[in-house]
Amino acid sequence: MQASPLLSLLNATAVWHSGLPPACLASVRFLDAVSLTVSRGDCIIIRHRDPAAAGVLLSVLAGHPATLSPAHWNGQRNASTGLRIRRAAIRVGAMPWILEGWQSIAPASASVSPPRAVAEPSLTRTPMVHLLRASRDATLSAFEGRQWQRWARSQAMQGNAVVLVAQALPATPPPRLGQSAAPSVRELQFRHGRLLP
Image (cartoon, rainbow, N blue to C red; front, side, top):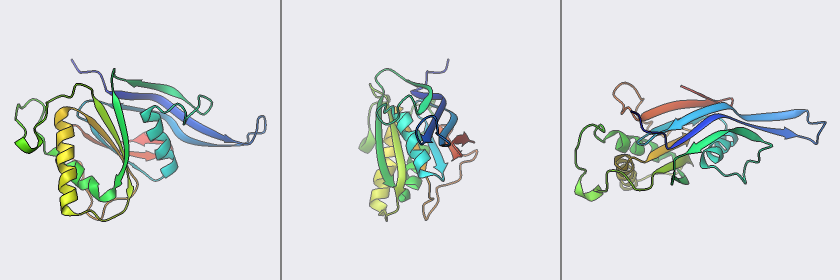
């Protein structure tokens, strides 16, 4: 039996209209029937070309009703009981380190103890989803990269989830996700308001 997801969106649509009714002739569709499920241990990479639409997607995932009024968006957002959401902007150069840390954990079926330096409970009492926007293009030292790697490994071991939204690729691109990637890592394209595999 599969555990229920931490966070899910079902048919989320966000449209902004310009002008006053009834003369609203122009509209911009940021989200077009977007559905997404985030489960424990997921690392979801969403590549986009539109920063405004990516910001709207993150706001909807975070559940900020003040940002998006019902007149502008509709759909269904479900979150597990007690779920904590954290949003942050990170450097693009942290992406490969986060992916490497996330993919370095053993499969959930294997019972391997983490190294003492990052030993933490296997599952947190309160689940957490980190919404990270990789938008800052500053240099990242190897020390900082290793810190991100340890953080990602720790989050994956605790059963938390990460949604990483990025427009630009780092100078050293992260490994292409293929059959060797951890099953909990997914890569999606966000184009014209839709999430595509």
